[in-house]
Amino acid sequence: MQGLITKSTGSWYQVQTSDGQKFDCRIKGKFRIKGITTTNPLAVGDVVDFEMEPEQGTAVITNLHVRKNYIIRKSINLSKQAQIIAANLDQAMLIVTLASPRTSLGFIDRFLVTAEAYDIPAKLIFNKLDLFSGEGLEILADYKAIYENIGYPCYEVSATEGTNIDQIQALLKDKVTLFSGHSGVGKSSMINVLLPKLELRTAKYLNGAIRACTPPPLPKCLNCHKVVLLLIRREYAN
Image (cartoon, rainbow, N blue to C red; front, side, top):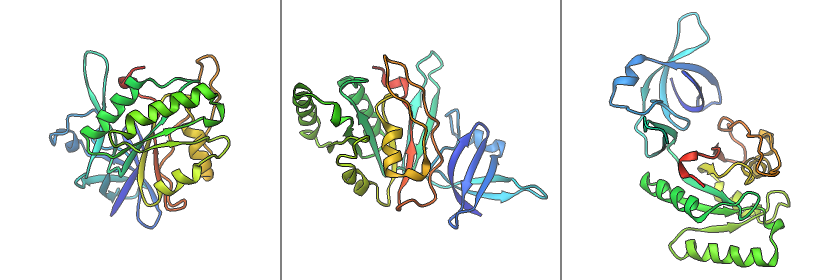
């Protein structure tokens, strides 16, 4: 049988077949000695073959299909271990806010460099447009000019007000998309607007304190979108 990994929890993976069935699968030890040096040999977005275990409701993954791309993160400690975040992506979107919390130019640059390194087209989504003052809109224009001039599409939205969300909706059609950004920038709020059936938990940004949400599995088929939600990764720094 063949399916798509939609969720990863430790040594177990949720695999969804083309007809929507979901199976809890584990991997054989040989996956760890096939030249895969990352801490996780498989990731959300991978296409795999699997076989049902006799007299059990679980399955064993037997083969990993060739990836068209993938993106990794590296540990900031001395081990420098790498972890595959997601595979077979069509695009990556970085959710940016100029305040509450602030996303620095350095953070944006590091994200874009990472996406380029793994051949993943990247876009910048400037959220919380409803909170911008006149001065904030001028700064936003400066940010957009920097990145649009070097070829990165930029979009202005408000997840809470629904402003320009239709533009993002159109970009997601038939795409596997990675959402990333600092905690508090509105990733979950935006995805709740785009894909309300997911009902992701959200929290307000208040004095730097954020209650993080849990990334969901890929939806089966919600308006022909597939979304991978990624929380803030420390490797990009502040």
